[in-house]
Image 1 (cartoon, rainbow, N blue to C red):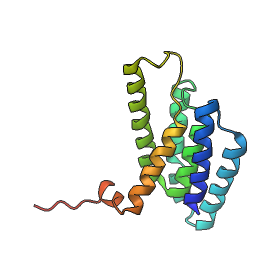
Image 2 (image 1 turned 180 degrees about the vertical axis):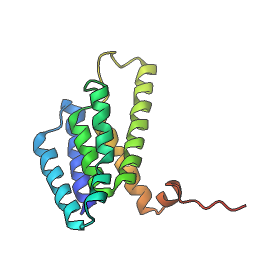
Image 3 (image 1 turned 90 degrees about the horizontal axis):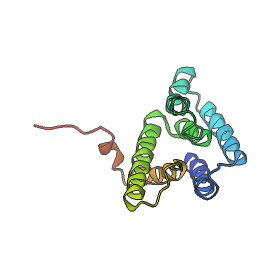
Length: 153
């Protein structure tokens, strides 16, 4: 269920953010409500629920510090991802999206196809990073990448 909700949210939102530079509220609000309902149905308690909100809170603080350099739709998408998948997984997806965004920005700067005043959309990179995470999970590779290696000497 988490994969369906997050995939729909990120896929439609990525297309909208790439085309219109806006994420529709009619998309992000139902996904946020669905994520809250699913998180509540898990019955994990208050502390794990609050821990799941940390990646979104981190991005929200970055939004404030960068004077709205990060859109509120991106912040809500990370909130939804962390509620659906968990804190560590959302941080992996956010890290991947940030690295992809930085790579895209560097490529466009080298090609001189990017005006100085335009911002890079984060949402499409969240979608690509989410897809890579799901693929790695499906291939059972993320446990090793995620720091669960055992070093043998």
